[in-house]
Amino acid sequence: MERTPIVELKNLSKTIHGKKIIDDVSLLLYPGQITGFLGPNGAGKTTTIRMMVGLMKKSGGDVVIDGQTLSADFEEAMSKVGVIVENPEMYKFMTGYKNLLHFARMHKGVTKERIDEVVRQVGMQNRIHEKVGTYSLGMRQRLGLAQALLHRPKFLILDEPTNGLDPAGIREFRQYLRMIAETEGVSVFVSSHMLSEIELMCDRIAVIQNGKLVDIRDVRETRESHYYIEAAPAEKAAVLLRTAGFETEPLESGVVIQAEKAQIPAVVQELSAEGLDIFAIQPHRRTLEDEFLELTGGGQLAETAAK
Ligand SMILES: Nc1ncnc2c1ncn2[C@@H]1O[C@H](COP(=O)(O)OP(=O)(O)OP(=O)(O)O)[C@@H](O)[C@H]1O
Ligand SMILES: [Mg+2]
Image (cartoon, rainbow, N blue to C red; front, side, top):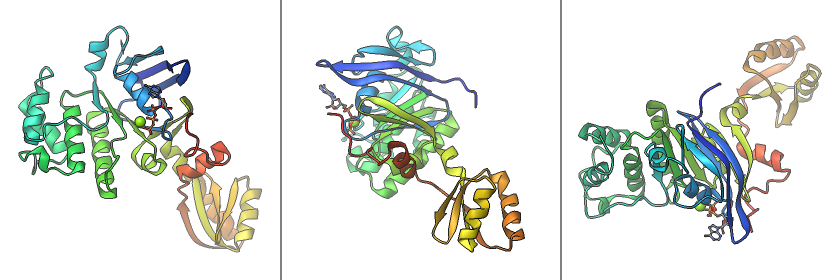
């Protein structure tokens, strides 16, 4: 997929008191894609994000947003960005709608129609004329999202937006993010320390550990390249498939193989021809956790804090 990135982090670095907090981070972000920024507490997610939006000075490197360099054209570059860092600032005694009107005045050309549109996009039509003080955390997050989208940013940055949300709230937020990435073509960059959440929310994942990017990978690719085959006798299936050149891994009463979807019919024929009984074939969703255990040789992701 050859596309033009909308955001480029170039050798971004931060040193505080002689200690490298962010170490030479380079990353490309694409339109319409949700990229997860995954790392344990203290890995450097917030520091990176703060530098990306000019809330903290960089020690080295640069950020290019839609062709504008942060260090040379700050205002211009930031006009393309929507941000939710920590809890969105809202006036509790005003209605959600009045809050949006207030924020709309900070940008050029945000029409009433655009306000209505973002309200619909985050599913707030029914409550938008109530005071923010009466909103649940999930609703405040969605209002924050609406606010960040008012000026039609090409790039949306969110630092741990689902912190404190319950599973239903997280799921809802995820669906809104997906819809926004798709309908508005926005490139979304969202941080989290939770593997499972990032895996469900994102197309791509950039992993940060101790201030360094240690991995960038595509989520869907990972998911679709493995199939679980339940067949009897399972041992014989494993031997046949290995002989046929597949990478295999025994699992319960079957075997997991690494294969393309197009190879599956031939696999079925082969196993049937050898007299095996096939009970089920399904895509095997290797979780990201499996991948990282492999990658780190023991799953240190959650434990290794930058000290
Ligand atoms: N102003 C500062 N002075 C000294 N050290 C700092 C400063 N800001 C951040 N750090 C250190 O930089 C490292 C990265 O912190 P950061 O807040 O970016 O991590 P994070 O990935 O956002 O973590 P969390 O998941 O807890 O939010 C930590 O070790 C932190 O202690
Ligand atoms: Mg943080």
